[in-house]
Length: 390
Ligand code: CMC
Image (tube, rainbow, N blue to C red; front, side):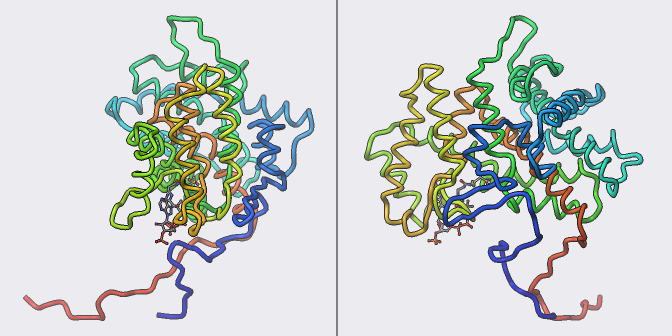
């Protein structure tokens, strides 16, 4: 069979070199291009972070303005995209629609796309970053039966997303600035996370020379799983299942999570890399408090359950021994829901944010020497045997 390293789940395999994001899971450190995520979340904004992730450095004022303008010029999608929706039931999960829509964008930009040309890669990245919020908002509008909104390029990235999500022709809708700021921070907290399952999927797909829209569609598919991006949706389902914050009720769910005969897991807890606090979770918790205060819901029942659940888990031997801490998704669902984002759109929001991470990794791979990603296996099937004669 040859000699291979056997590493199921890639727990000890580095698949590439990368200069984009650094994580120290033991210390709970996350740096993008060297900058700590908590500083970025407080001082920067999503568009500036996109620039840094793509180019490697923070932009100066001119670079920032021109990048931002460039993104806003590509926010519209081809009108034929509307026809894609006709193929989906109105209750289709938006992540299923997103896989199709983003893969389908390849049909609009496939001809003459030369992925060996850095400028063409840059234009593809700009198109993707710009169009993702438009497509995401269209998915929501489709599911609630309202007309699609065209993007508004006078609005900031997060503001425009919320406008497209919630504005209707019947009223004069104004985006709440606290919500827009929180949304922008949520996008930043999800922008990149080195070689996670979806990013590795994008790199693997990209290593075949596939077009960037197909690669990002593959990333969206991988993100959808509840162990990855789908966790934010699952956390809310768990909080709602728990239902009340009585001590004995919460303790019962903690015991269920510890019971190896029970498939129940405490969603939003634990991480493959972080064996300490996920630094994104800390910022998310603060954002959660800010947004709930804005809408006068500081005593939100889900928040009460989440905080008590966290407290009990962090003092419990089972979680301490296994180094299970809240991850970014533990509080994100509560914030998104307070902003008005429906649960089925949570993972879509994650996909909008992660697009810059995915496409930056794709670009980094194509800018360097790489070979097609092709893992080997340890074969455990039958030895050779003859086909039975008839
Ligand atoms: N609840 C209860 N037990 C858990 C949990 C949890 N949430 N997470 C891990 N464990 C236990 C697991 O049963 C195992 O115990 P034992 O050693 O006795 O068999 C031990 O902790 C190690 O778990 P693992 O599944 O081997 O660890 P992993 O690195 O393969 O998985 C994980 C990481 C994130 C998939 C897992 O912690 C999990 O399923 N968490 C819940 C889902 C979740 O919140 N996912 C979002 C991740 S952050 C956002 C993102 O990057 O997409």
